[in-house]
Image 1 (cartoon, helix red, strand yellow):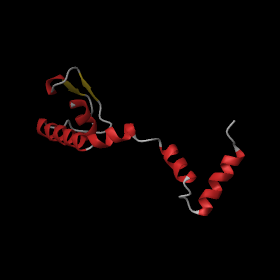
Image 2: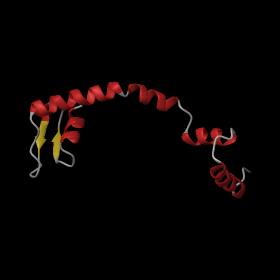
Image 3: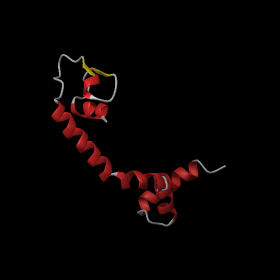
Image 4: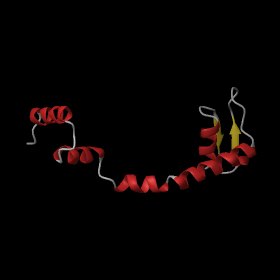
Length: 98
């Protein structure tokens, strides 16, 4: 999680991490200042909270049908405006299923 916090706090910074604690961090960047331990801890907490808040989204995205399947179902149900349905049908006619 430390690496994710560093990437988030200092995008593009140059550093090496030889473990999973701040003591294992070697800061190489000369343009960006190394974040403080407090900044890192706050960012780790924010990232964890964000992950927990979005857990349902991750689970849902795995189970939803693909966008293509969803759109195809809408097309077949007649849910598109006539002009969009005509465009889709033209493509389906141009490239029919084998």
